Length: 117
Image (cartoon, rainbow, N blue to C red; front, side, top):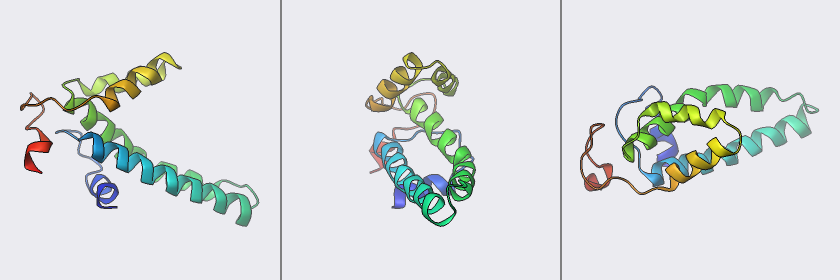
């Protein structure tokens, strides 16, 4: 759970690097919370999607920040996030980037976060 909270606390941190574990654990916990929000909307609010929409808006900036930091971790500029606008092909490219291991040494975005572990 600390991965999720660390990303939320660093919601405006577009500088630096994020490991695969940090990114994927945030993504997993985010997906679980989103499913719970959708269930609340469906069963308690007759499908109005109020809770899910508010939650999605609340985590939009932290999600973008952790994605940019993940791209920095593999040595890519954060602007690569825009490739996700291209349906299917862009999503596949981002998926591959998100699964790629960190650069071993310090890069222009900062020191390797794995070395501090």
